[in-house]
Length: 88
Image (cartoon, rainbow, N blue to C red):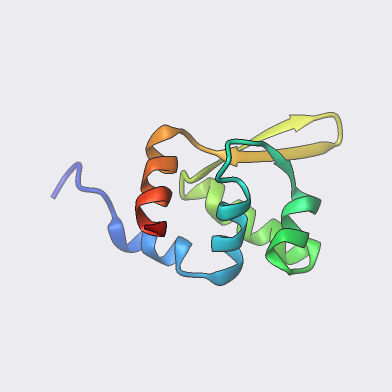
């Protein structure tokens, strides 16, 4: 049906432990650098980069560039509310 949310796609994004840890690290509204998120997720920087790209493509995160660094944050209040509800 047109306009329906693809719940399965969102489920696949948050179903990965590393991506879930990335989302949890961003849960307080901060924007964090990719290198920090790699540590939070317990994965290599290259692996974190792949996860971050998927989360951005899926609309759960946004990326902001500041110089040579990229900072990621939750895409908005709707995404934050979804993540909070899932955590409960």
